[in-house]
Amino acid sequence: MNGKYEQNFNKLRGGFYTPSAIASYLAEWVLDAKPESILEPSAGDGAFIAALSKQHSNLDIDAVELIEGEADKISKKFSKFTNLKVFNADFFDFYTTNEKKYDAIIGNPPYIRYQFLTDKQRNLQSKILIQNGLKSNKLINAWVAFIVAGLNMLKPEGRMAFVIPTDFLQVSYAHDLRRHLLTHFSELTIVTFEHLIFKEIQQDVVLLFGIKNGNAADSSEIANIRVITVQDENKLKNFDSVHFISNKNKLMSNKWTELLLPEQDRNYLFNIMNQNYVSPFSSLAKGEVGITTGNNSFFSLNRFTIAKYDLQEYVKPLLGRSINADGVLFSESDLNISDNEGKNNWLLSLTDHKYEDFNEGLKNYLEQGVQDGQNVGYKLSIRDEWYKIPSVWEPDAFMLRRIGRFPKLLVNEAKAVSTDTFHRIVFLEGVNKSALLFSFYSSLTLTSIELAGRNFGGGALELLPGDLTKVYIPKTNNPEIIFDKLVDELNKKLRSGVEDEHIVEWVDQELTKHGSTIDFDRTQKMWKFLRNRRINR
Figure 1 (cartoon, helix red, strand yellow):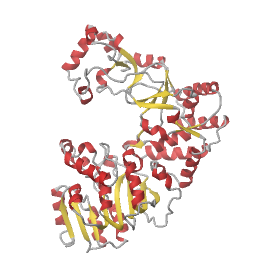
Figure 2 (spheres, helix red, strand yellow):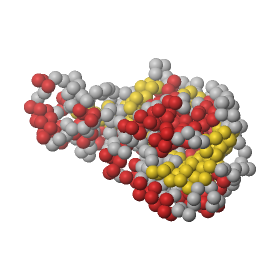
Figure 3 (tube, helix red, strand yellow):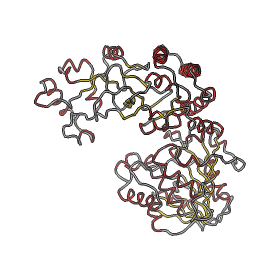
Figure 4 (cartoon, helix red, strand yellow):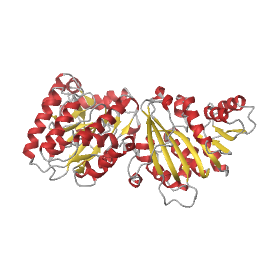
């Protein structure tokens, strides 16, 4: 691994080991098929070897472990098992030099981001993915290549059982992997948890169980798939009696976060999204990430700094992380309140100014910044002039990027710009802006946001501009003037602290009054389930 790896050894190598209850659960399922050969590609502390050997003492197991000290521990700990071979190697190297096929593969692959891999590991990962028909890019985590390589080393009808992050269900870079598994397994079972298993790293995981196709050459049939949810590792149960889902073909294109919902709810959403009851947000507005300054503390200013260096002509009003924006209309009044509180609500924007025209105050501010090392950093180093921030423009609205309990969509009445805490939104021509703004807070839209975004530890949900194709807005044919009044009322309710659940119920009721036929009672239950599952972990 590279230098950053050594700074946080355990976290970067995925060295947070598997609870014994989970290891035993995976081992029991693998052994049910009576395998003769088993591969553990990321042996760690030997949790899976212990679980396997407890149930069967004479298994042919190959265990691969990168860290020499850990590999030695495993060899000593299980020295009496003569059919255990421990390889002190990088699994990517092991895969490229080993042609052996296995009846079963079991493990908890490391969750290592691309930037923490060595150049050699990056090249091997890319080769593994491309050779198996998947795309390679700099977003892909090592666990993806572990699964692809493991699948390739599995015999027809062999079993794979892995502990993997819930990113598998929701991130775009795992899209190819999801499709790959659907066409190379005959059965897939996913076990999700209500509570975090790896609390020390705030890592949400799922258990993946797969039975490989019997005919390796035939990948035309889509795997049967089922999902079960349990409270935690102490509530694991047999899933053989759980039914496979019916409408599995649509999983070829969608994220799989929707699998957290009951099948009847998934089918309901699928139907209303395909029967002209809703519009994708991306058909009404386009989104772009906010401004990346490269150094917010230097470029985000308060009125005192502006006055001290005489910077009034070089700043633009700013909606940033520290600014309170409780309603749906970000106004000049909000800006003035933040200004009076001394918040950093001004952006130093110099793109339209030449250095020779800078006043003395600005030159002094920049010179002080250089002396303090404020001009150091990757984003600043790739600019021709480090102090000129690119892509500074005023959007029609702002959308919160990282969501806690409740999302935000704010109309930009203050003619402000924003850092990348918010996405910049531009309404498309002819769109009923007030209807879009009001309907954004419906339970149907909030449910689609929970399904489209990516969960992070601590309960945060990140929504990126590319996800807006999967965010849906209820359709309405009522005149804009009706929604202008509703938006004003919505703004007042949010600013006065009305609870978010009451806001959503009221929005749903108003949309029903104005012609929507969506079953909002149903979508409210979905939204509450998904939101509460996320924030209560």
